[in-house]
Image (cartoon, rainbow, N blue to C red; front, side, top):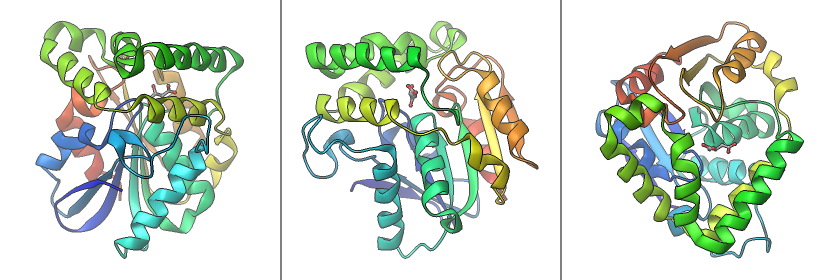
Length: 254
Ligand code: MLT
């Protein structure tokens, strides 16, 4: 499993969004907050990481991505860590909470949701899978870029669109197809939220159209003592669109 690492101190695992990779966290890895050891793995298959697999054959579920992270933590001799997940990374962070709550000592949930896919969401997954099969990762980039970055970012940081396209197109179509299936089939995690006992920070871009603010507000309401950071003029990829805000937010999880 490939992972990137920077900084020293409390272990903090950074889980990337779909359809990106660990490289999504480079802005945070380049300036790790004092006292934090940042570890950013590629989820299974992303950037060609992990054993090769065909979509639909041995297709991983969200919990399998979570088990991979637990194995990485064991390999690094990390008993528990703060887990920060953005969007699909948040789905995996919630899977970790279900699988091994004692190994999650803090949570940062960015631009994500605790609910499962609706019927409409599942139908959207099928459409996106057809795009991957037909046009590969370039097709996914074409479909998703307008929704990943906020309106203000697309207007004011045009270079970011090219950088994100590059991240998406560095992925294998098979890994993307498998992740679409894993997201479609993920369970609802809403019921575990009231029992979350570790510090939780929730971050959401105010221009996020994929996991809108209402999803973050619902998680904030369900987790007593959680903190909600609303990021103005930012869309779904808050850690890339407003890197400093996300970096500072990591330090609040304590
Ligand atoms: C992500 O950013 O990880 C995905 O857009 C999440 C999703 O499609 O549910």
